[in-house]
Amino acid sequence: MFYLSREIKKIRYGLIWFGIIFTLLLAGCSSEEVRREEIVLAYPPPPEEARFYFERTIRSSFDVKEITGADKLRIFATGSLGTATGLSKPYGVAVYQGRIYVTDTVKRAVLMFDVPGGDFKIIGTEGPGSLAKPIGIAVSKDGEVYVADNSAKRVVVFDKDGKFLRAFGNRSIFKRPSGVAVSPDGLQAYVIDTGGVTTQEHHLYIFDAKTGELKKTVGTRGRKDGEFNLALQVTTALDGTVYVTDSGNFRIQAFNPDGSHKFSFGTVGRKVGNFARPKGIATDPDGNIYVVDAAFGNFQIFNTQAQLLMFIGERNQSPGPGRYMLPAGIAVDEDGRVYVVDQFFRKVDIYRPAGVEKNGGYLGGEHRPKE
Image (cartoon, rainbow, N blue to C red; front, side, top):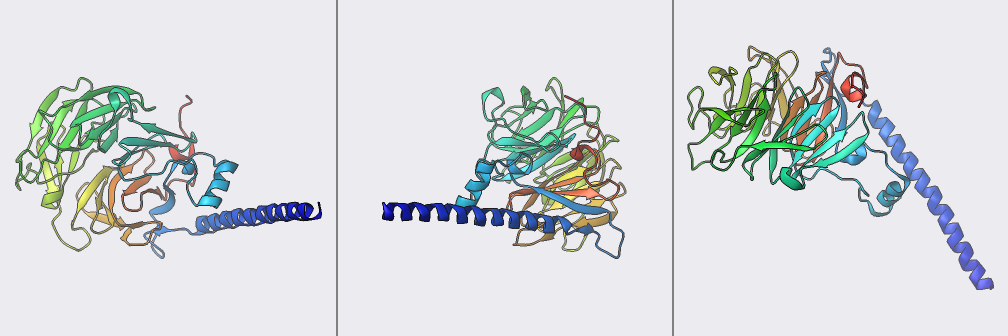
């Protein structure tokens, strides 16, 4: 009995010490989180007046959903994410009223992070809306989510909650659909077909967004205005202008809503304002143009006259806010927040414009209509 009691005491003391150490570790983590929050990254840095602040990073469902005690214990014991679903190989991003939609080519799905709602959902893994290799993504003014499926060679449309609505396009039309955008009025969908090195079919397609009818095919492979060389992504501005990252020609091309060429800007180079590997593209409510460059590890901001305003981010092999190894997609929400995807670090970085209060706007739960 003596030896049995002593063993029980050892176990009891061990559990007590484990609880103390676990609590201290959690407190340490919380303190570390507080310290990180206190570090304010401003762009441009002082003494210049800040235009953007780094706000937060999204990596997994834990970044929007509450972490349970069991999850905390599992993280401590195994170092894993517990029951969290993390990003595997994200590419595109779109945002609608605080909901962040991210395409993931490894998970073959769209991951939805509902920040103000504290919810997370995986979209496109079953049924008629199943995805094979989702890349480009866009959201219409009504909250319809359009996804360019590179392997299935079609565009799949979901409602804001992830319910399949319809699909359009097929293998007789598309070679490698990589980018999609929707007109401000929600009536037209623009799809970039990257094509390939063995084909001349490098196009911008214009579809009726509701019926899926192909209305026009723009461009072919080439270097002239209105032609493309391995174009990757497309976006629209509030005035209806369509912008395309013409990656192989190291430029951005702008088109009118009917597909007629408007203007082009950019050239290959290593200086700020040049392009090396342009990928994602987005516009903000003021019409400014945001272009991700995978080689520079940043995104550059241009005004409507194609004048460089500033750049944010750096290429870096170590993870951290504003550090990128393989940035891809980019989006700007209704309030001007900027969302940048990095495939290598498997994250989405979020930047808040200086004119928006911390925890303000749709991401902070303001203005969002009640369900």
